[in-house]
Image (cartoon, rainbow, N blue to C red; front, side, top):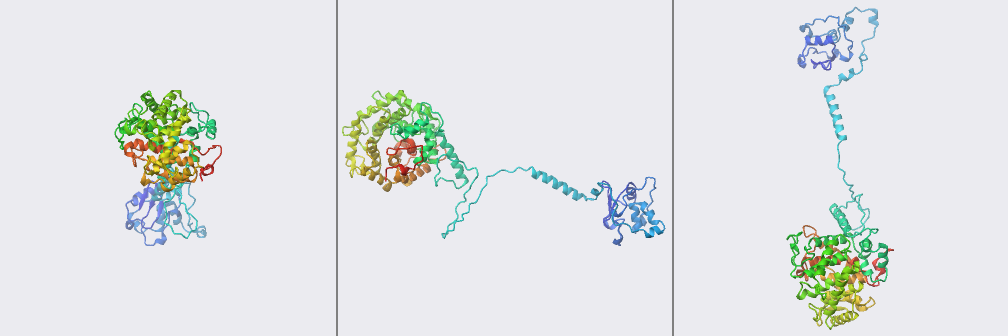
Length: 605
């Protein structure tokens, strides 16, 4: 027998009887048995299990406190009768059973099998302790589950195609779609479209980087006319349209129309950031010691073999100006201002910009520097630059060889490579409204006649040498600025040869060739330009450094790369990716008020 005083119950282990204890019964229980009884020693153990009386059949009514307890002999409890069992539950009930039978008692119905109504809450005492514990623990765990925080994760879906095809193909990568896919302002090509989560994150980062160098169309740019006037200038015949396309407020429209993407603009932004970090304290850049600047501290490799800070400074400023960054506006106006100041302060009285460049790099450096001064003046109209720009053009005119060419030193017989930079400077000066003698440009055309073959389809480095695709690209660009149009069959044939015979190839890197050929194809437009652009833009984006301190630059590779090093390679790569807006196309008018494709407005067939 086990007595649970806290529930006022007594349980028999042998017969399973549960008896409710009153104050009297608890006293009897203490006299007759202990809570440590085993089933074999229980005080109510009987063989006749049919005579058990369940506690629920006993009366819940308690005896008056005046009734004396009935003594119980332990020896008599070995074989208890039904009356004795009931006596333990309620002695008052025994007295009723011991009375002689009367007519009323004989005719009385048998004892009820169900217990009488019990006070509210008394049935809870019948619940076993283990069940109470189980219910309490379940309730506690349920409350914990309600307060558990789960981390939200983007909805990922597996896209299944329902297209029936006889071709058996292996399954590819699972494409992840998210409902919060960002809205990219610039195009995303098929090769750039993300198929995995890391690719998607990289594209989102590229979109953020591309926004660094463009402005909202409603933004106000210091010293620049309203964007509505810029749009009208771009669509006009005015020569100012050449550099008007660089305005950061029309960047999105120009990139969309001319074939750029989110990744090409991000590559430009990363390249400019790298160049800005490697500027010397005095505002210059260096080909051979650019890694000595404070921000680099020797962490970059790829130094050039040529010692020419003037060439490095001019090459580095070209992509900043190409992206619409000037010394008056833009996030890099400080870098541009310092670079221009260094050039002007070190310019010779006769306009010479070679500064520390001697030998083969001399006239290269001057031609590139003259382009920088003329473009900066044309883009801003800053009168502080007018005289330095004009004097740099005067030096080019005085340095021309009587046969029409330019080479390493003033007055030397020319070569096509050096001539190209001088002609580009003369063209920028004309756009800026500076004085450019017509005979200078005519003489340059005469020189090109001496190095051409097949009436102008191909060109060589110097007279008597074999034509190359590199010199052909540079010479064709000069022909365009000298007045040749797409009606010229030689020009069309030369352009076609660049695309078909010497398309961009990653295994055959030649940034010098790509720089000139990309400008030629962009001016021509049409299908040749689209074919060229689709190949080259991916090569340049993919070969740009992606990690470490060198991220944003290009590793020197290909002809002349060792001479110019990482500064040379990076500057020309950025300019090439800026082709969509660096110069307005010569043979095509751009109307930003309506959508047009390159093929629709190109005269190239």
